[in-house]
Length: 147
Length: 110
Image (cartoon, rainbow over all chains, first blue to last red; front, side):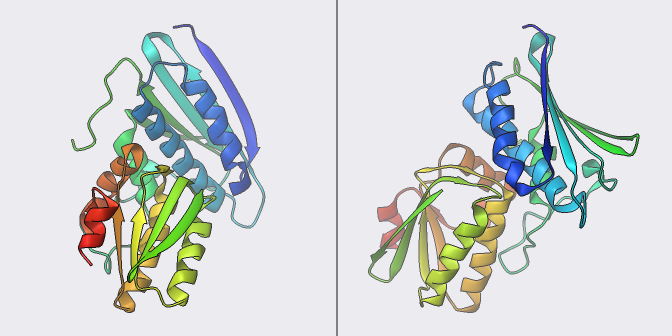
């Protein structure tokens, strides 16, 4: 597979979600992932973006850059960059998924999905920006959910 | 996302198709809240045509379930498929809610 890269910059607003997902999906669907894996990638991109839309720029407008890159051996890297408040999703607490309806809280699930479903997640803070990379390997078989 | 409702005895069968994402989840929640406001207490959410759900959708489901519980109501699900089934499983929602294979199976329980 040839190296290939594309990127877009969108306003950090929920209105950008559909365009952003469409951009990522049109890139990823040619790379040999199965249907289930494509859906998981789409889900994780939504979760990261919505988190940025909601929290990265409190009370002010901002932008998000989304880059997709496919490398040799079927490695897909999706990098999401914002200039908002520092936030490392890898350091956030996982929700307790064993609680019942009354006790269950509504937050934290999206980030949990990202940590559970992506093959590798990397975060760095650089030049006052948050860089989040989700790395997946299309040559590997889609992993079962209940690991 | 599209929502269709029909009444089967005391159960409101809500068929939801398409995508419940961060954009459409508030509409889903509002739609079901209106039914609760109209006095509905038992909901079967039929998901055979639902292609995708994100955590925003789960958040709406949980919010509705909490309201229903205070009113001694109930919400169950049927026919989850593919990615939606996976999301229910990973989130633990598959354990806190009752999920039936078919609408018929679900309706038999009421």
